Length: 221
Image 1 (cartoon, one colour):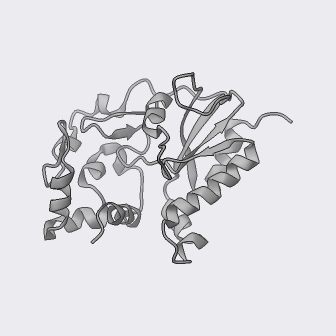
Image 2: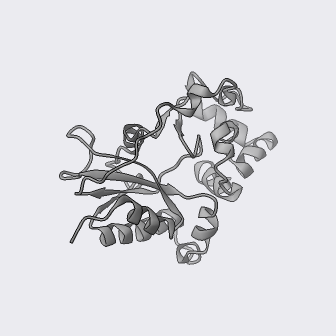
């Protein structure tokens, strides 16, 4: 049986509202499972991811962590179908090095505010899992430069209404304190203002309800 191609994997992932957001051929120091020829990073395919996920049974049975449980069911099935190993950014410790893998893919970079920025998802990039395949698949060439290289405005540096996220890093206590105020409702309902300010993020079409879900997980009422 021949190894699956990238297009076949991407098409199967898209049927579950997932996209291949990057991939690379791991080396000894990349932290991938032994024998991995290709590692593919999977994240939301927009538009439509949140609508698709919310219709899944995991969101109707009242059990905790519905998004993570959905991710395991769907990505485990993709792994079985394509003879891969499924890996996840949650469920640790130990934690899998998804941030390092994203940088290694050549499709994500450190942004001016030090968060990951992706070539198509901007600062709204997130990963639901990864597939580690033994085959060495042909991968497209990544972009030559980060989107920030051509962004003269750099709105991410000044977008935080609490002044908690800038080039110096992320002041988590200041962010949480701001979210507890009436002015913080905008971020709680629509998602982090810095992530939304990125010009690439604006074209990603993430449902604000998904951002609100993640904000409630980060900062419960």
